[in-house]
Length: 135
Image 1 (cartoon, rainbow, N blue to C red):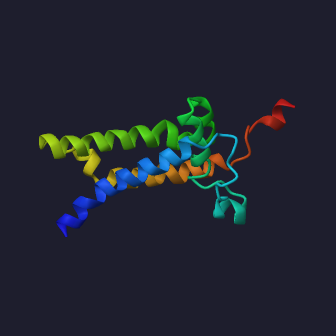
Image 2: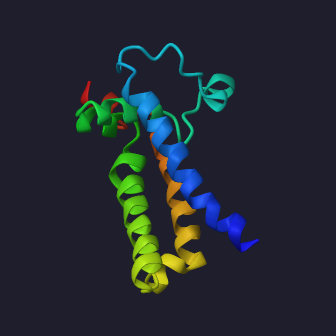
């Protein structure tokens, strides 16, 4: 079981790299191959992942503001947090220093899930919320 689990990390890195390469070679305006989000197609609601592919295309082409505009949670918090967790994992594998307690805590996962739910609700509110007052 340990050998299988150890092999999943390099496989995930290769798969992620292949996915980023595929997104990188696609021009940001050419997103016809990107399948629509099934949640958005059925309900009209933006899910937590809506905009990630287009945002990644923009991020890889250097448009950070455009990427944040497509999915603020992922590009402001998600990617930096993922990079930090990857650093902790690598430091543990190479140097034998375990990740901090907060990074291994189930509470951190629950906090991320709660933040994702709040983000989903907030991003689907009619914005700007006080537009009727300004008119």
